[in-house]
Length: 170
Length: 124
Image 1: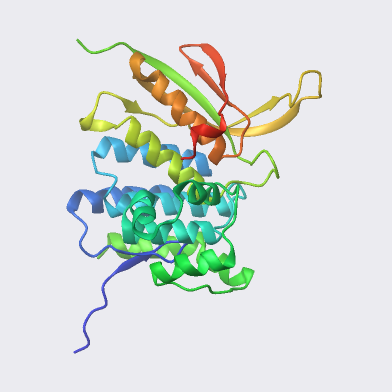
Image 2: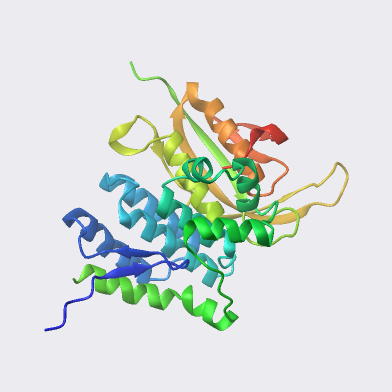
């Protein structure tokens, strides 16, 4: 018999968050999130709601559901035209967070100047192609060019809803 | 005895100052993460983290005498101990850089100020 594939939630930057081992309180929280998300609230209203609910629940920001909610919020904002679609900075930040835990640890390990990295993330500077390639090498990642249509599909609100439904009924 | 808390309100425009483009998702995530780090919510600390529930339209003057410019901001409300208001100012100075703003509107218990960053203040 084929082995069941682990259930994952994929963020707009392609990060795969396992959701098959969520605790009862994380699952309950995510169920409430799913109901509100389905209502397609205005971006900031949804953000206000999930942040307050997350605090009330007492979950830790290291919980996978925190990252999932940030992703859901971003999708709504992009869909409603209030947030820019992710660019290479968002992808880099997510890779660094996932592999190093923090920018400081990444910079210590790689020798990248933290000030320069902050300016890049703030859109005040860009990495040269050479510097980007060096960073990607460390992160074991590569540049991929995609069409706008593919990018839109990756930030789709409906796709996130499907993933949420699977995660909460697992 | 618990330190007296004050209500702080601040506004983050939803577009960058230089090119008027909406911010990247990472900017909003960094702000929320930093607020939660500096003012831990829930059981771990006395501060409570609230979030504004609507986009707020407004206008500002780029320089004295120039016509007002309309903008839309996200409003944040925090109830924090009086002694930590300066921590919020430092956070907002970094936010000003990250969100490409010349200054951030901050109201502390009803008294309005504009938090203006310098190059040394860094980024979120």
